[in-house]
Amino acid sequence: MSHLMNTYGRQPIAFTHGKGVRLYDEAGREYLDAVAGVAVNTLGHGHPDLVQAIAAQAAELIHCSNLYRVLPQEKLSDRLAALSGMDEVFFCNSGCEANEAAIKLARLYGHQRGIELPGIIVMEHAFHGRTLATLSATGNRKVQAGFEPLTPGFYRVPFNDLAAIRSIAEHNRNVVAVLFEPVQGEGGIHPADAAFMRELRELCTQQQWLFMIDEVQSGIARTGTWFGFQHAGIEPDVMTLAKGLGSGVPIGACLARGPAAGVFKPGNHGSTFGGNPLACIAALTTLDVVERDDLRGNAARQGDLIRSGFRETLKDLAGVKDIRGVGMMTGIELDRPCGELVGLARDAGLLINVTADSTIRLVPPLVYTEADSRELVDRLSPIIRNFLAGQQLAA
Ligand SMILES: *Cc1c(COP(=O)(O)O)cnc(C)c1O
Image (cartoon, rainbow, N blue to C red; front, side, top):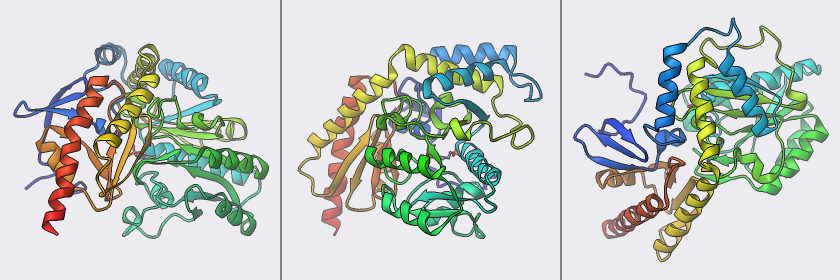
């Protein structure tokens, strides 16, 4: 009997090592990775710059506590502020923690303005994490069921629906913030409309609400810009980061700007591990390599290549409802549940993910070459084709 708590439906496979965009299992079989640890391994596996930087930092100092100044943390905050236009950064260890910080910040902002029971507007099909506040903000009953009572203080609206947000505002005077993803990842790779983001930005400014954007999955060049909000040419008041920031070393961040900056004071929030030297060096190295090797440009190019490739190879298939995404976030939505495809692809040496029941999610490392992108399209297309055909025969 396994001593692991039974929280995951795990696949029957274990990897021993990885190199670039390939992973290797115990039997030495090779897999092309289009999951990247769920949008985490920005630089792929075993990237020499990252390995060297982590090893050197581990020898110097791994952890020392936020009781003291932490130099790599200061450097990383400067770097993130310069890239994003944000003013200040709080470091934690994961996406849900980054969103917890954002939710606490919004509530404190409300209290400082005399609003006793502040409310935050969130979206249908959103995913913000699995802690109590973030699962309450999440728009998926499966994540919430069994964990009631939920954290109060969230208003839910359909995604990309400004009228619904205006209507909440008319009936509730306690709204202090809006929280959403620029591309809903877990929800099935649904990008926010640029016009929606711009109009929402204006509404937030008018109403003195904080515009809070969850870039945990979309941030760090994944969509072809440093952050997803940059596609809309706007600036958020709060942004959260995690997944791709440390290329696999756990680190999360909550960034604040303008009216959201200066809200937290000493004692309001904290994290024992948050922003430790090791994690910050991993993040600094990730940012350096993304910059040096133009992985933003590469994410945009490879993502376009992958989507146009699948549009071509799958164009005659009625079972394919939509192929969408931005940069290295691609969703292929089928007309039926397709979780089975994960195993079929794995047996063929391809690692993919399925989310929202019927959407194939491809979030590869940002270091894919054109040959890797072509290989993904060429090898996955027949598997999708056979799956759809086989299902028809069975029906
Ligand atoms: C994965 C994810 C989270 C949660 O991150 P964890 O590190 O698993 O806590 C939050 N928001 C979004 C958009 C995510 O994709």
